Length: 280
Ligand SMILES: *[C@@H]1O[C@H](CO)[C@@H](O)[C@H](O)[C@H]1NC(C)=O
Ligand SMILES: *[C@@H]1O[C@H](CO)[C@@H](O)[C@H](O)[C@H]1NC(C)=O
Image (cartoon, rainbow, N blue to C red; front, side, top):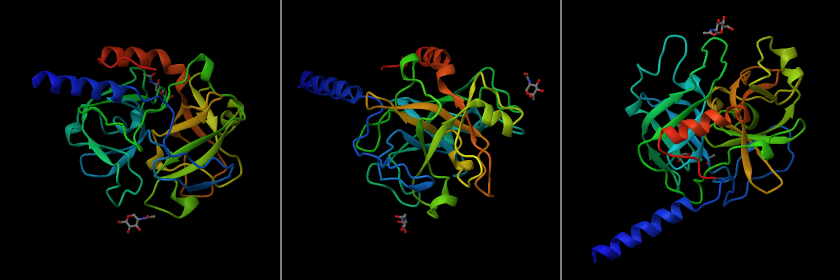
């Protein structure tokens, strides 16, 4: 009897790991709508909400492994706060969530074991604004919880690609404050961000969004993934929302994202060292 139980457990573990990256069960809307719209529940299944020890939304992140979330470093370290002072064991990760005011059918809560900030993260310039969250519990795959793909040399972005930033912060565009929204953001040439932001870092940052329009991301979107669909049909996390987002006023500046491709080595090495080598 004991043997039978063990076998069932192993089968379960294998199927948990067997889901492909970047493939949602529920298809997202990908009509080329300029501006924000409410997302189909579960259609961006790698999205997680990062909630601090007081219950406030710190931002978003994306699942790249059952134990690993890709996000921005600024959730954990900035002017006046440090990752060493935070009660990380009281923070929560919400996966499978759609409406923040209700417990959605696939929603599950996870705890943080450890946060690894990029060693070159600079709180002033936001250079290397990237971090990995290692969860205590493995995240359970379901119809609204799945990993996104990490880009590699074959699956990078190009200027002109129409990518999407799903997030709970883009309320200005849709008027819906509770549910996951999505914003189509075209990738722009680095020079456009360099014209708007004199501290833009073209070696490690990427530029996406709009000039002279009112579409931008909000604070709660920080750390969220800019995802692009590649010709193999899978979604890749090309950028991490870092700065430039200002949805509180009419903005004419695009958004600044960390260029995930530039951090591939660091991400893979950190996952390996954490005991969760990248599986895709
Ligand atoms: C979100 O959930 C709350 C609480 O159940 C509900 O009142 C609200 O209508 C929901 N919002 C949407 C857009 O479904
Ligand atoms: C961090 O960025 C600021 C502003 O660009 C710069 O003055 C400072 O030297 C940087 N710090 C480090 C340690 O690189």
